[in-house]
Structure formats: structure tokens, C-alpha cells
Length: 122
Figure 1 (spheres, rainbow, N blue to C red):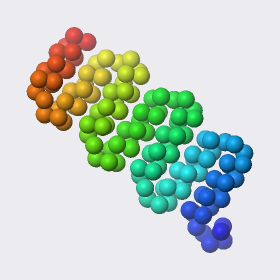
Figure 2 (figure 1 turned 45 degrees about the vertical axis):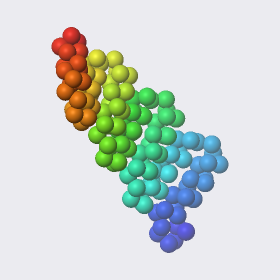
Figure 3 (figure 1 turned 45 degrees about the horizontal axis):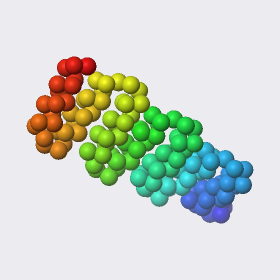
Figure 4 (figure 1 turned 120 degrees about the vertical axis):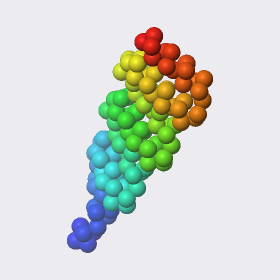
């Protein structure tokens, strides 16, 4: 397989290899390389989410999920992810900004007013 120059084949071989060592993080890296060679951004995001989950970083997971929803084109989903991210950092003002973006994408004037009021209080 190595002699054929197939990145995807090499990635699969390495995945099998790291699976035998029991390294979840290594498997995630290999699978990321594999999906990169197929051109799937969404698949890469999911692999990276699995990778950061194995390191225990909540903030990293939210950033990966933000990248994932960006690739699906959902503004509302991105806003939800970013809200979760800033909540994990403890920034109320950042959450308010995110919620403002979220409600703007839904077109709710009343919701925007509530968010802006919360921002002024913060």
C-alpha cells in the first residue's frame, strides 16, 4: 500500500496500528488525515471533536463544533456553539453578544431588545 502512494490507504494502516496500541488520540489524528484526503470538512471536524474530547478540553470541543456547523452553513447553530463556548469561559458579555447574533438571525426584534438590555447590565 505504501508503494502505491495512497494517503488514504496509509491512514487506514496507521489507524489499525494505533488501535493496537490503544491510543485514542493517535487514532483521531490518523482519521483526521484520512478524512482530509477525502476532502470532507465535516468529517474532519467530527474527528477533531473526538480528539479534543479525549484530552478533556470543553472549550476546544466547542470550537471544533463551531467549525462543524459552519461547514453546514447554519448561523443559528454557530451562535449556540459560541454561546456554550463563552459560557465555559465565564464571560457574560460575550454570551450576550452571541445571543444578539443568534436572535438577529431569527429576526426577533423583541429578543434583540432583551439581549441588548442584558448587555447593558453586564
